[in-house]
Length: 328
Image 1 (cartoon, rainbow, N blue to C red):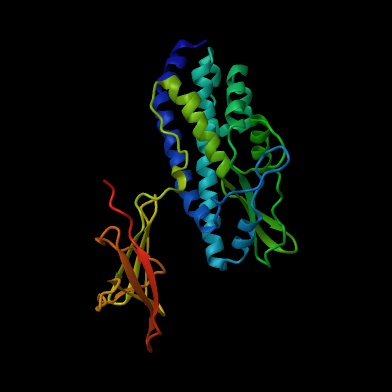
Image 2 (image 1 turned 90 degrees about the horizontal axis):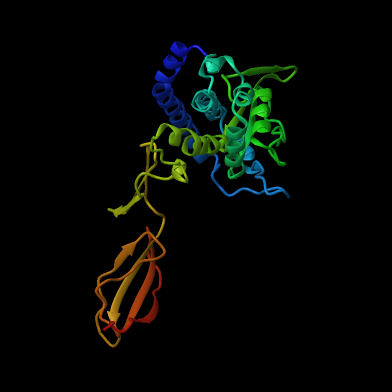
């Protein structure tokens, strides 16, 4: 073994680890907006063996998008799969360096090797660990297609069902060129066809590899994604002012969707203690529910409800309620 070459390889390990993380986070950022747009985070069905099946509703929703938005999603998917493919290649290459006695044999650049080749170079004990990690992942990958002509019916081939191990999945990705650079296929007579992958399963597998195999060997702390991929960074905001509803919906990526509109009708509520002569001022709200505060305990109240629009208020409906006894 060439000791000098081995030392140089090991010296590059921290840099390679950071590179894997950067490629991985770039892929997650691209995929998050796509999956949110296509409802790709919804619960999915499974086959008889318990493996997840790609959701048809995602393909159907994609088919109904404007052509410009379709191409935007294609670009994001190609960016995500390229980043994820590089993250996988460097992660398996790094794992080979960390688990092999002959470091010099792992000197070939990761992007010159297929994923299956990198996997085959790992010790059998590490391969067993990777298969165990893969078995714990119950997410999904699914293919999409866009063409110059009409969107083809059932173009997605669900090849993810059935029980496979991690090596078979890597071989499938290699064969289908899923985790590689952008690829454009020309299918006569329909014209150009772009096929791409939304690899949510791949993200969760690599997340486990980083957490269970790579980070512990480097004595690094690694926070798993869990459900963080689509979790919002702060709660949505809702305000009601001057007859307008304003909504602010932030997401984990720092993007904010804002909307404002005037509802066609509102609800007006008035409240008074039972047997009282005067109603409170009307509380106008755009929602179907509300809560009162500072009511007296163990007291009966009457609530008057009307609907209001540009033509005025409807006939009132009066209901009764009784507050709970104050706890001792």
